[in-house]
Each structure stands twice: as structure tokens, then as C-alpha cells.
Length: 87
Image 1: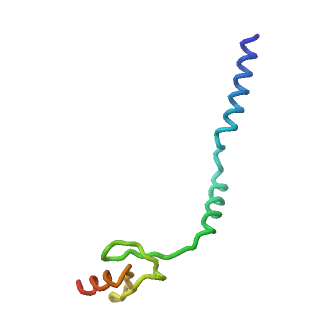
Image 2: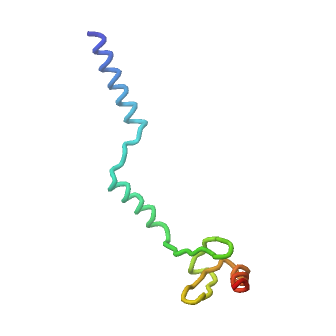
Image 3: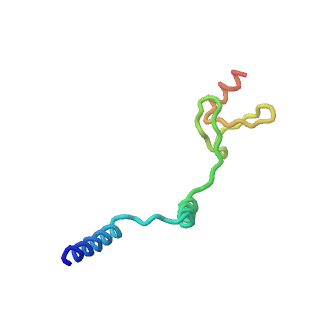
């Protein structure tokens, strides 16, 4: 009888410790809502890859040049000049 009582107490102790120290897994819906909360504090910025050095630049602040029908974006005037000279 004592063994059963000790096993029950051990299980209760285990369950309490687990509840205190292990985070419960979130459902898919709550994970999406928390990522929406985080992203609501950020600003969506379109980026483009500089074709010369490979840096990613904001389309709002980058230097742009037309290459036929495409618009290319550059991180600096040096990269833009290198691209134009290499054509």
C-alpha cells in the first residue's frame, strides 16, 4: 500500500515540476497570431540584390539604373558605375 502511495505522490510531484518548467506547445493558430504581432512592429521594405557586390539594398534608398526593361538597384555609385562600365 505504501508503494502505491509513493508512486502517486511521485507522479503528482513530477506533473507539478513539468508544468512549472516546461512550456506548453502552442497551437498553429496562436503561433501565427504571435508572429503577426511581431511583424506588426516591423516595416515591410522591398529589397533587391546588387548585381555587382551581392548586397541586399532597400529599393527605396538604392541607386537605380535601367537595363532594357529591367530596373537594377545598387548599393553605391561605385557598384552602379562598375556595372555600367562592364556592359
